[in-house]
Image (cartoon, rainbow, N blue to C red; front, side, top):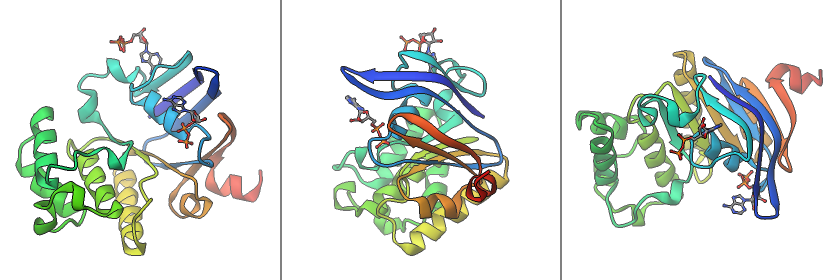
Length: 219
Ligand code: ADP
Ligand code: ADP
């Protein structure tokens, strides 16, 4: 469960979030929809403890991210698919992450297979990866600790149609197992296709929030 209450965040003179409250529930895929610059990444970074709200609270399983025991093992996050070190191979990237998290190396092979990177691709340097492959590597990194919560910022960008279908299936299984998924997109079509619950943000403010059927019915 993710609960954000009355979060306001400014960067210098820019107000990125104004009184944002939202929830993402276990067993549900929550789609976070809004145009570029609406504040989605800022909200997700605050949830993951990477930015501090000016006011309000962001809680994961009832406590701020930083106060979770082993937060990096409970929450799998993909916040910037281009953040991986270009000089390392995919395999090295995941192995280092596994070591940092105290996760057995065998899990690395597992997640590589899970995201559909071939062993040969895994041995290529990330600098040679397409955006779609970077997204798969990012998902692999997020899945590494077998988390109960996934926070994915624009995970579908750069994926081809088969990659998008794969991603939807993966998120569906994750949520059906009781996991909590919060994923952002600027594409209504994408959110509509994958989400159970939808949060709409515009200009740093929540515009609408609820079950997809209710929102699309206009109630
Ligand atoms: P989205 O993820 O929906 O595209 P962001 O959260 O990235 O939106 O951005 C929301 C607003 O906050 C934008 O106006 C953006 O320029 C601003 N912003 C985000 N991060 C920073 C930062 N580190 N410094 C200054 N402004 C920022
Ligand atoms: P530091 O990052 O300096 O180590 P902490 O992360 O422990 O500090 O947090 C310092 C204070 O900020 C605490 O009172 C904590 O509850 C609050 N805090 C941290 N993250 C959040 C968050 N996401 N939402 C609300 N309050 C937070």
